[in-house]
Length: 243
Image (cartoon, rainbow, N blue to C red; front, side, top):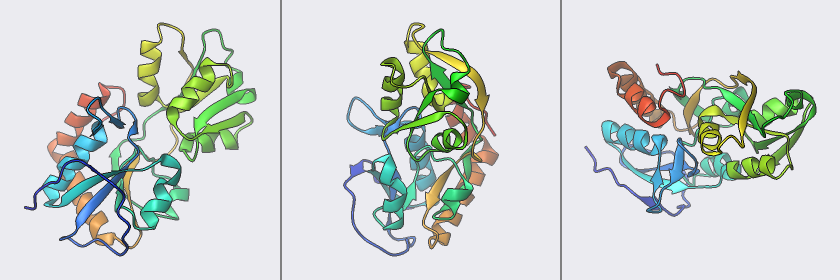
């Protein structure tokens, strides 16, 4: 078994398919807790960091983590600047036209609206809704009748609601839970949950079938032995479904 390399690395510009002897560069955003975030020690942390490390260890792969902004995370995968995406990315038909996905490692989880107390639920259809750009949530709003206001980072969507720039934010409920709980009643959930996408999966280049199949095999093993559910419960505390 190859040694698992821990730590963040700068983007390395190289091209071509990944083979078993190569270092596998795992791309993440580092800005979407509890999926992935930068901790107080300036290290990538969260569910996907722990899960990704275990996947690599079980697969006998040497893996390193690369941080990349969300807006360019798919183009930089396709360009060869890293080999996978583990960044809370929902599996969608549109994304599957550009990259391949493993099976989901998180079930379809709810997205939710958050607003200031007293906000009328009608803003969901006729107000201004903030989302992070290039997400399944931005697609939901764009396809509806509300006005879409996109931001590069998820934190900016929360700020837009707080400062009155947007009537509500739509994002993964697991991400929004912390802000609602820590707001002291200054932020509340609004309306019903929705379920866009087919769960969260690891993105890989369409040419890297061997790498995708390797990770698929290990994800299946971790679903079967219950270890994936243990991680989901640890990081999401029952906030999303398990397998």
